[in-house]
View 1: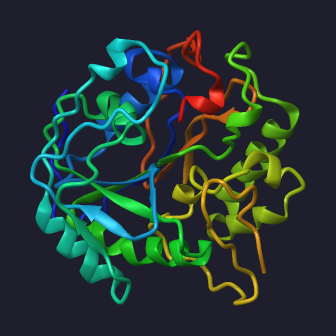
View 2 (view 1 turned 120 degrees about the vertical axis):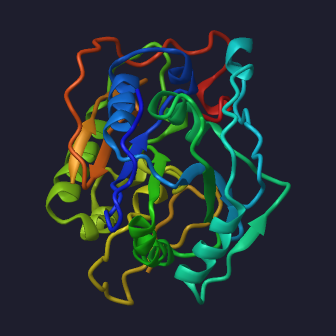
Amino acid sequence: MTQPSTPPGQVMPAAFFGHGNPMNALEVNRYTAAWRAFGQSVPRPRAILVISAHWYINATAVTAMPRPRTIHDFFGFPEALFDVQYPAPGLPELADEVSDVVHPTWVGADVDSWGIDHGTWSVLVHAFPDASIPVVQLSINASKSFEHHLELGRKLAPLRKRGVLILASGNVVHNLRGMDWSRTDHGYDWAQRFDQDAKKRMLTEPTEFTTLDAHPDYRTAVPTPDHFIPLSIWPVSPAPRSPTHQWRCSSTATPTARCR
Amino acid sequence: MEVLVDGYAYGSLSMTAYTLGLSCPATSADAGAPLPPADTPPDGSNI
């Protein structure tokens, strides 16, 4: 399906995807059908900027290569999944634009390290299957606070007026150690409580959803911050928060990300 | 802001997706989360 082009002055939509199991890339199910419907509904963007949970490093960086590679950053899956390629072009000049809008945050231009990881391509193979739109990834900076990422998202918002589709990919509830492969479509009670309360917050006070760190199920639902942070890089203008209310996003080995 | 799709997988994963500035048509697919790999523990899969 051919998407309509972006009318001048239009503000591009944005989205957060719970990407889940990378096998979604090979299947048609209720999630991938919704991702496809999203891709068919948006005006054709100039570029797609993706914040993926799987590019979690100690720096803020954007991919800046003309032909980003497809990264298969998972283990134990069928060969067919390792054969998937998402050959979208990059857009090196978008690195400069990102750097400009988030100033004074320093943004590294990655020309040969990362590419398009499964948090990105497992969704995009459904949303934009022809892989013709340039894709650029923005890293999560593991050494920076949650507040930093909120501010980063606010600063990215002007790119939506320049034809850039900003997507985030993670999972609101993501606890690998608690996962049970046999419970295919099941959510534990605590997972459902946290996700439902997050949903209420997102739909009513999206810029205040970070107060979910006080939720009784937070530490179980978000044992590491990598998959939750993409939801914070939401390209809207958040309300100012108290400087005493900050999260630290340390390594994925750290069992919680909360501090004051 | 709207919920694009939601659901759960493997007990401790939520699949909720949100859109900002866009409403998408409802879809009719019924199938849920994919079957997992047979021999890999979840915390070794890097999903």
